[in-house]
Length: 246
Image (tube, rainbow, N blue to C red; front, side, top):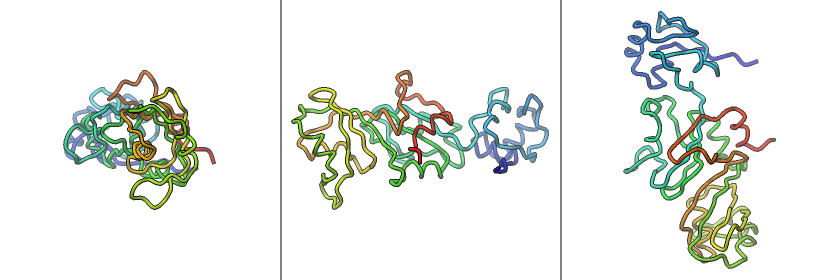
């Protein structure tokens, strides 16, 4: 059985964006930090970082933010960039300001380009991030594609062949499955994440993607009631849906 991690209160709260160590110490000394209903008296106290800590700990009467190890699902809107540094609206701006000061930082698990919407995962767990994006784990990603021109009919076979080469690349794509929804729309499901892959795939067969929306990763689907720009923390059961069973 693994040992539960313990950490000093001032370090935990500072790393979660509640302020500097000194500011957190003032919070504690003012009685604003409670655990199981009792005020924590010393910021040097060590506490166990358990999964239920957000339910047991309060800061100024409000539940503690999710402790380190969180993974969230965000419905990325159009026009927002998956970057910390680029100009314009960023996905991190959709999170609470305090969450943007966390250490370790919250990062996107892969990226969606500015003109692609839908399911985006974010986490502060580096190990989980790498497991999900690792090519060895073959996490599937499904996209709803809307096209400029009607499908010609052979795209599904071309994508599934495992022989399609994209411009300026020397390795063919892994097989991609396609489900036709209408003459100008389809689902495509892939396991790779090459630069603008879906757009370039359709360009290679003479078409142009006018809208692209990711609605599934692994067996985890974007819920219909999660509005663009909204997010929520995933449960352990939902996280298990992302990675294929071994």
